[in-house]
Length: 430
Image 1 (cartoon, rainbow, N blue to C red):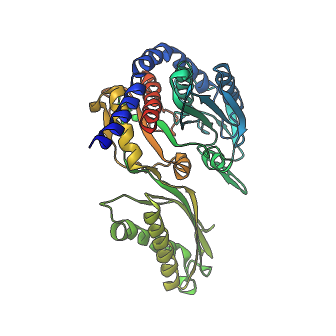
Image 2 (cartoon, helix red, strand yellow):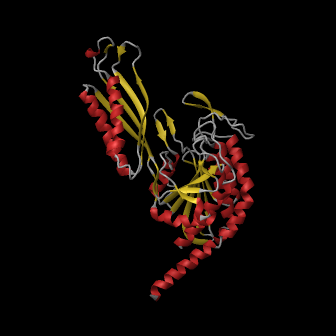
């Protein structure tokens, strides 16, 4: 019994030592709140698309250097990585913020409304932080300043990852994602665990949402070509009609969700977003092309859904005498919070905001390339509320829309909670 009590006692003393840093974190987080808001408004006014975050990256790199960190630039094109070495030995804890904006023209009437435009897919468009990445960067810059001011007390080191191209780069012949490229370039090799957050416009400010296990969906592209036999629209019996065949295939896909997926465990989505076929009202075309998106949770479910999509479309086409070419392109894997790391993180979040404000969320069918970091090392991802209290989530403009808007009074909680997660993880791993 004595042998067991001593290690537990030493572990609790170590964890207590790090938790004693919380009052100082509280004080420093509150003191830096106005600066975080100012940074966010600047980034919002001057947003940049993926792999073009040159201005943002320079501001970040200059800030980290001023705090005395080792800084590496041009990681995965425009990414910035800063390492804060603590005063005592311990684990390397990574924190991540994504920097890129979207090809969206802002409609909000704000003093810091976006002024930038760009060319995307050959079209002139406005550029907007319509997913909140401006707040992610500002919050992590705040965390960097808070922790740098107490580095001699840290029992380990912190790696600050400012990532480009979370929304992905989709150009002819090129598909890339910032997190994946950062992992391939070795950013995670010396990391023990990674934490990240995403602002959530449909969760009340002052709340943090999370889910253990699969949290956000894997996303894959679906591309289908159904080829039949062209004929005059007045004599359809002479054709193998790819339009009718594609309609039957789309209806057949609905059985995947109703009959193949165990929806008591995780949801799934198969959406056909566009159909292209034909050129004239009285001609049955030779082929129809369909594109869509697939959302699944976990590798096993992803494999099942992919298999059923291919089987259903191929067999329906064959039964009509047509031919189907089904191409599924994997994009982001599912964002999965490791249960053990999640269990360790929850007390830190509850200490930061109160247990009643830390809520379990339903699975989110949106995707996040933070999942690539989680594939490399244990990771925990959470949602930070940014909706005005009392508003109806169903009526709030959603992410990726021109009216997307977030409240700024929750930013200080983001700084505080990420800082807690770092020092508490260090204390538990000592």
